[in-house]
View 1: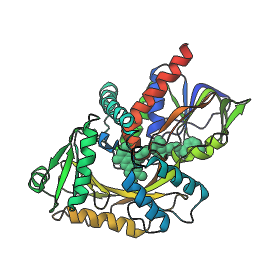
View 2 (view 1 turned 45 degrees about the vertical axis):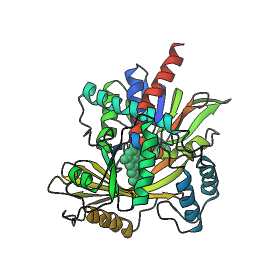
View 3 (view 1 turned 180 degrees about the vertical axis):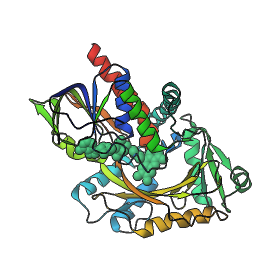
View 4 (view 1 turned 90 degrees about the vertical axis):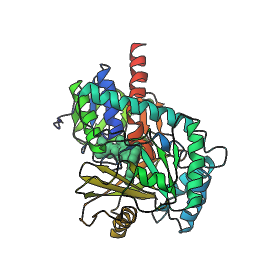
Length: 406
Ligand SMILES: Cc1cc2nc3c(=O)[nH]c(=O)nc-3n(C[C@H](O)[C@H](O)[C@H](O)COP(=O)(O)OP(=O)(O)OC[C@H]3O[C@@H](n4cnc5c(N)ncnc54)[C@H](O)[C@@H]3O)c2cc1C
């Protein structure tokens, strides 16, 4: 990846703020369409796109805001949350976000956004394959499928009902009894059953982000390693970005700075309903193949994803507050969950600890739209940023190129 610091006096058709997976794929499709693109990021790929699970999951198309999660959200506010926790002290913004989440989670509302997410996820999966083939870049893409397992019959029943509704959106699923789970994943300890989503896939999230950026540069995008300070605007029209290295003028600014997008949008007078959803991962070296699928432990809400000689364990959904390293117990708990699921595996190595924050919207739909003249916001992908990135980039490029032609 290139990128000096000289920026002052630069002009671009499009300036993209943020080179996580969303900004990188926006840059790729825009540069490929012939736009003059400048990407600004002091630490490309250094946000949530680095250490996540790397699942491409049409099976996650039901947003987090649904009735059971609402009950969990209430427990979180009261201090007893398990799946969702709140970073304290609680800020007014987090409480306002929770109120909007509660509205989105009402019965009847929860499934409204799922068809759009499922369609975008399916499109992205096709685009990832096309991208890897066209650019000849290795992103570790594998049709692994996702296997969701539980030791609890009621949890499995709920997952089965979710799978039935997802099937109506074109997301394939198979319900597996304990023997079928053991066949599918011989290394797993005893569970009550599982649901397999064969259409889900796995990639290396950091490799994919870097590959999109490398490909964008091949197509002419320029990466500048500097931070945006504020968005410039005159009479309501966005005109560029002030950065730590000076101003950059642009016809359009694409704001794709993950959770940092909120403060930057505010500098342009735009309020974004986005809260950080903190999560963490532990990546352990492993000597042998342990898993064929990516595995989701529905009881502990932990994902296990093996890529070559690394097993990554991810978990956590702590809303609000500033970034802060998780306690050692968070990582110990990930390891205990994995050891419980894979009783024969040697998982004692210290491993690499990571934490990051998902940009969460209350209803689970990303914000990908022009919010004022010259400003396109591309954030709020929550749990699905890797899954939806290429489709997001393609959408932005189609919109901007249609405007510049017409
Ligand atoms: C534990 C965990 C597991 C996850 N697992 C999955 C999964 O399996 N599948 C999936 O689809 N999604 C998953 N996600 C969600 C996914 O990681 C995010 O949705 C996605 O990475 C968001 O990408 P982004 O580009 O919007 O933000 P980020 O990756 O956070 O990128 C934002 C970029 O903006 C830059 N930036 C910040 N401020 C500025 C500034 N002032 N100027 C310039 N640049 C700036 C940062 O340096 C960063 O590079 C997971 C998330 C977590 C936390």
